[in-house]
Length: 279
View 1 (cartoon, rainbow, N blue to C red):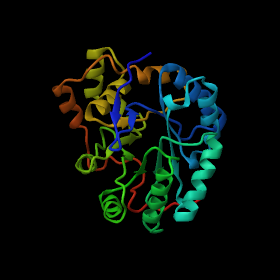
View 2: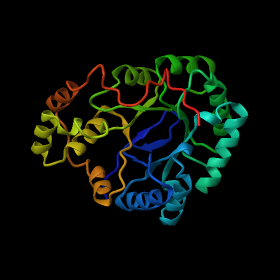
View 3: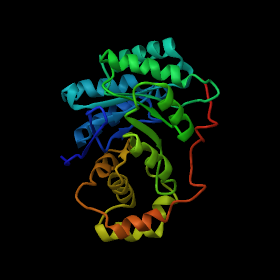
View 4: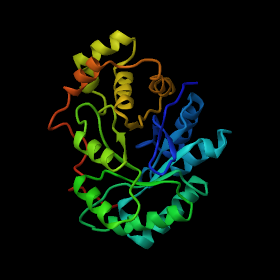
């Protein structure tokens, strides 16, 4: 068992800093992968309605034998369900699929600015939180523009913003904005989808120095920046490897070398200010 680090959200809720993501994992595989992750020591599971695997995730949590209160469970509102009443309905449906009476964190998945519903959707999240069905509420893929508007027009500051973040795209501006408002930054695609990033010479040098893989070095980088990070895998050995990052520490020199990998065109996913996918 690994000594999991926790951060404290602005509403005093502790969150395991390293979690387990299940994007693009079919429901039956999600059950198997989450079971393996919980067995390996993960206590933070991140899913979403659009992933179509909430049922498998919830079943894995229930069947694990781990008390529900020891597992930090996140799910997200999909774009089609935005709007005050539809958000409340979508949340209830997520709870039913997960087989639980609360989640630890509920997020708006994307702002979808053309819909112009994210403020009213977030007000529904505030109601869900007030009723105790979500211990904490936040957002995902919000930019300076959409997050600033949300802060101006709602009553509860989001505890967390989950955004694309990796050494090629380190999101310094959004991390600084989050810190200014007490908002934790959580990284999706934390390994930059592998490939070129994990073959960087700087990563090879650092990983050899510590006897770790390049992926483990990148995950350690996230932890030391103060990010919550949610790597994904369906391979048991990789699931165990990704959590084995608490027995070494990167130096200031290592962190500086990784900072140099940041690039203006480093984004892999869509731009949240123009992404308005429905369906």
